[in-house]
Structure formats: C-alpha cells, structure tokens
Length: 177
Image 1 (cartoon, rainbow, N blue to C red):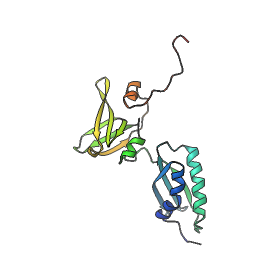
Image 2: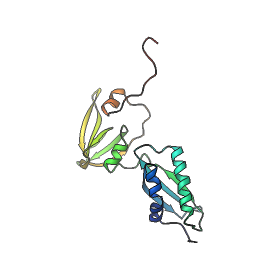
Image 3: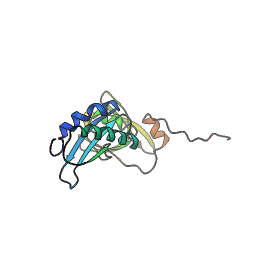
Image 4: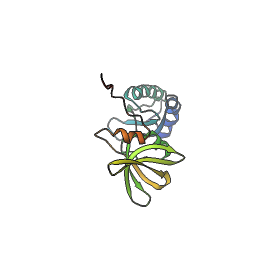
C-alpha cells in the first residue's frame, strides 16, 4: 500500500484516457494534502459544457481508478470545469467560449469587451458595440495578452448573437397564434 496521496502526474496519467473517452481533457489537477481532509481536484474542459451529471459520472470513474492505487490517505475528490475567471490562453479556449462575453487586454495595453464569435486560423472574431449597433472585429490571437470570460446578468441581443454565429433561441410564439 502506498502512503500519502498520488501526485498530480499520477492522477493525470491514470485518468486521462477515461476523460478523453468522455470527450473532455484534463486542464489541471490540484492535489492538496494540507487540509484536514485532503482534496484532489480535477479540472476538465471539453467542446461541450461539463454538466453536473457528467461531472458526477466522471468523478465516480475517477474514484474507481484512483482506488486501484491503494493510497492509505482518505481524500475528497472533485471534478469540475474551469471557473469563469480562468484566462483564455489558446485557440481551443476561445472556441469553447463561443458566444460568451469576454474582456480582453491587447498587446498594446488597450482593453476591449465583446462576445466571442468564430475562431478561424488563430483569428478571433469578436462582436463589439458600435454606437447603438454591433460590429465584428477580427483580432489575431497573438495580439491578445489577456482574456477572461465575463459573468452576464442579462441575455444578449439577437443581433449580437447572430453576429457571433449563434442562432437566437426560439421564443415558441407565432404571429396570429
């Protein structure tokens, strides 16, 4: 029987194939043995959002796999998606944030806020406010020094979604009904 907890590398090597089969990749693993009840946190991301049912299923699979290591420490296992404040640092992060509102800092130090549209050949299409309307602005990812998804409290306009390449949700009502 091993002592302590598995290392970050051991956890990634053990769980990677299972998460990949489910359509997710492991973004990070944090092994915290300083708490009274140690914690292993697995952060996973994919092209589809990680919902609660999927996170629970992945946690069950991860727990079974980790149990094969027979570590003598008890621990809490968490499987979660990256938080809203996680910086977007690669083209895949921007693709996965399609339709989300982001705050950018450009390499020249200026700031920009808009909605993530299509990412093509390392060029981001960002939907930005232009007076009372919306415009698309194309930005090379190399010109973005920092990007973070913003929390939104009201729904975006249909025009903004359309420019971002997202079909507006159906309202379920028809004229004359």
